[in-house]
Structure formats: structure tokens, C-alpha cells
Image (cartoon, rainbow, N blue to C red):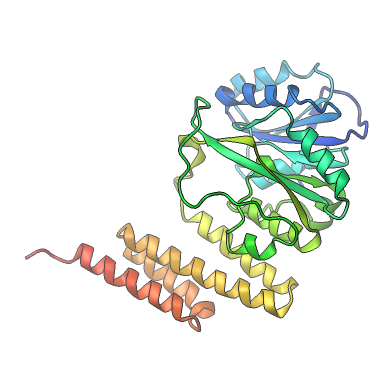
Length: 314
């Protein structure tokens, strides 16, 4: 984990919940985000803000919070690695539980209260998540796209691997000891570090779910990286490393999902007309994907579609 300078707030006090907020130059959104923490009906929390080398404007705002009770700010040199920023905040946490909140998202006032009560009632579950809704940059609800959200609880490892269980980082609360046991976020990952952590948590503990949209996940232009392919690369890394720690049945599931991920990367490059990148993705995924007919079907279809889209017109 990364270390950083801490300023302000109370000394460590063993609060019930440590709220972890990473941020980098999001002054437009971070104020309402933090206010949604201050407005929680459950008030036995500490707030740890990890700043990833923001500019003077945001840092000036964060310094105004240093005299607030239960608020800590960790100043970091900019690295641009979300996992490292979150880990730096986690290292400062003293609460029994850690709750994650991104600096552009919002919590409903009863979010912490409901999760604390649920985990107290279900001691076999050492972590929890809630429903969510997507909102635009102004906070207005967006029309849901894709399959409807379904809650999954208990052993959700398979649902996480196949992406049939949808968790958003600001909806998750986890026992700090469990978080330590699994090693926190993987700082070698530039993308997908959240789902990677959820799968490792799922191997250690069943999860509880609150089927209510207690989180607003804000969608805006800065959500998306220009390097879209890193999401596929992060998923591949996560699936590959998990194979070393699971039983044979789950290992087979991970291999199949890894081949599907590789095929999707090939197809996406092909759709974009990026033939060389598609070829590289094909060669890179072939060693672990060739036994799966679905992989061959997807990559052949992608290649054919790319040829038809780009062939010379008569």
C-alpha cells in the first residue's frame, strides 16, 4: 500500500465505518459527494480523502475541511492509479468497516445505517453492497440501459466472474480485517481493480445485498478513459491470477471467461477497423482460448465483419 501525509481531523478512534474517498481534480463534483457523507443518519464514521496530486483549486477546497471533526486528508503525488489512491486511504482507516465512495457519486442518507444494521444481523457476511441508479452530471436519473439490475447474495463468485452480478464501488462496505486479508486493491492494475477485489472478497465470505438504490453513480465525460482496451486487459489479468487460487471447477469457469474476454477484445478492435491491434489481441489470447469453439466463432465473425466493412467498393 502507498503511504501519504495525513492532516486534520481527530486522532484514530476506532470508528464503526471508515469512508474512503479518492479524488483528482473533480472540484465540480466532490463537494456534493462529501455532503452526502455528512448527511448520513449513521454518524459513527470517519472520512478519509486521498488526493492524487490535484491542482491548487481542489487542494485549497480540501484544506478547508481539515478542521472538520472525523475528516482526514492524505496528500499524494499524482500517480493516476485508482487502486493506489484507495489503498493509501485504507492504510489510514481505523473503522471496523470500510465503505468506498468515488468523488463524483452520491449516497442516500440512510446508506450507512442500513448496511451496518444488515451486517450486524448477518454475521456470516463480512461485506455488503446495495442497489444503485445512474444519474447525469447534474444528478438527474438516466434511463437504464441493458439488462435490468438483479440482486445476488451469498456466494456470488460465479456471478461476479460472468458479470451477471453488478456491483458499483460506492455501494460496497467491507469488514476492514477481511479487506486486509485479501490484500486490498491490486496496484498493478490500471482498470478493473474493483471487480478484481470483489472476486477475492467473494472467495472468503458470502455477501449481503440491500435491494435499494442507495447510491447515485454519476455518468459524465471524465468517467471514460481514452484507452478503452485497458478494461479488457485488466479483466484478463484478474481472471488469470485467480486461476492459481481456486478449485478445478472454478478454474474451468475462469478459463472460459478469459477466452470470452479475449474474443471480445479482438472483436472490438475489428469493429474499430484496427486490424493490427485485432491481430495482436488474437495472437495474445490464442494460447489459452483455442480449445473453446465460442472463441473461434467470435474471432472469425469479427475478422469477416472487418473485411466486409473495409473491402474496396466497386
